[in-house]
Length: 355
Image (cartoon, rainbow, N blue to C red; front, side, top):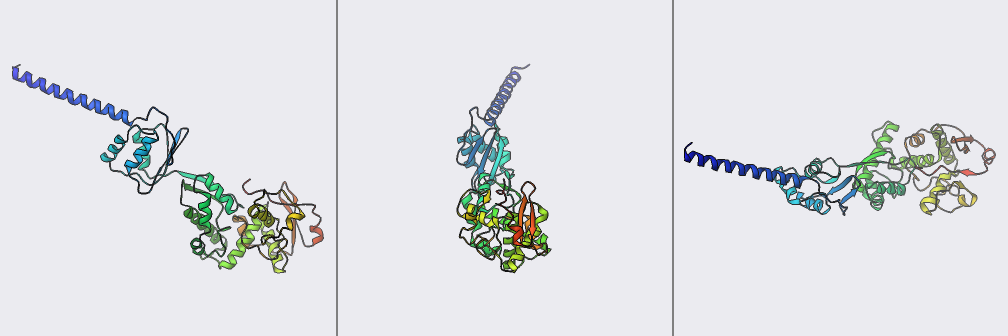
């Protein structure tokens, strides 16, 4: 082989070898930087590390570089420079929201989650018969929104006017159901979602697309909220609603144990009672329907479908009283006279909602 050819061959071999070496080195470096850090990650204000998974919040308007810096600070990635390089090579942007992923995870795995837009959804169940305050605590415990923010949104006049709610809060108008919300979801959107569900269920009951007159609806919802806290067996709910309407028609106080319980737990902040005594039903408060005729100032709980349907479709009867006679089965005895009603030795109340 001529000397010149051998020289060219050696130079080419050296160049190819160098390129292959550099490529291998670069590949090794990228594999190293892409791999999870060796040290345990740690939580911060916007990164939560719990066991085998991490929750990361991407804030509105935040850049990929800012997210990378926070991920590096939390120990979820080794180097934010490699993180930034990935976004220069493939310009998919991180999307606002809360995301959950298993750890340890590579940078490519984390990146695929944050650019997907598939936010973490939390399943939360609001039991029938709960109050706004209890609903707020359930949502806060689930990490959906702060209790104070929820209560503020539920008493926002703009929200109340949008749904034609005449009271001071959305008490009774937020449907109890199982919902899926993103973590750190805006409180006002939580309220609107629950209110929209409520009015859809009302439309199913009435068969009308338009909302009922706000005054009539408020009366029905208030009755439903009382029935919700009184009934145990679903088949008795319409009969209970009929009793309350009968009492209203003749000017008789509703005499609902549930309204006294509302005063004790929601207004006075005392523990939920198992039994009501004379001293309880004599508490002077507008919500106490033992000492005040007519409806309470507003709903006392979040009625479900059974109670709402009963309030719109009460069972006709001439009953004026009912009392719990079988606590284990939740059965009541309905009567027309006070003599029958007074045979009860104690006044039972429905268990605390959600328990």
